[in-house]
Image (cartoon, rainbow, N blue to C red; front, side, top):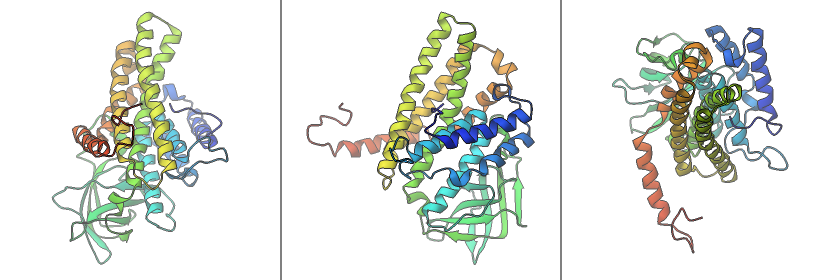
Length: 362
């Protein structure tokens, strides 16, 4: 995982809190069998730290500038993902909602669990009129446990708008029947139907999509992918320590290299965001997300080859991460992301500095 050390005391505090909850349940992370109750206990503990978790692009957090606020945030998300990707999914969405509200100038978010629901394209889209919404929203994770949602809709001019919806209201139908996934099964992802439900609009038109923080938040999702991948890889380290052989060493060398290179890119992008917070850094973040997705696939394949069937069948934590990670990484957009990276690269290549033969020149 991204390093846990004295430069991130908040992560140390969060880790101690979660470890205490797990120990109270007579478990350890490596043998963790999660019940719904335990998952919710861990999530509730994480929510108490929400205001302490820095927003992306907040700059350095100490006088020496030794660690960026963005990296602190990603380290926390990576750690939580290594514990459980369902909890990470909920917590990342919660933190993202708070950061979005901060960016659009919303004074102070109410207490409780938040979520961001931004999927669009349903045949019965959300309509907002005179403080009420009706329509359907898909892909809503945490539907039955969220207190408030930050939700997108398109106005009559086709512009994206943001709404705050209190989920403790009548007139909301929650349908979990369409969620058939085995991986990320516990995320409580549902299709919601709203019938004249009170909502309040926040921010200006297209604020959600056009703010620079849209891409800063997208990088946070990839920190979750990375954290789970790194924890799966750590099982191979433990297996090699217990019973070393040349094949395990070869596999370990392969994924160690891939993870280390990706880790360094996280550091680079975090510094980029904090040193130039006014920019989206879309190209670098799209590249980061694709790199992490590639490494996640590599880790899952190589660790499986090295360790065989046993951890998939006998270790609940390993099996759950292995099932959840392929589903979670599908928040990547694959070929579409590659296309956009190509287009942005072409634009960048038209603006070479003096002495540069190409944009990749060392």
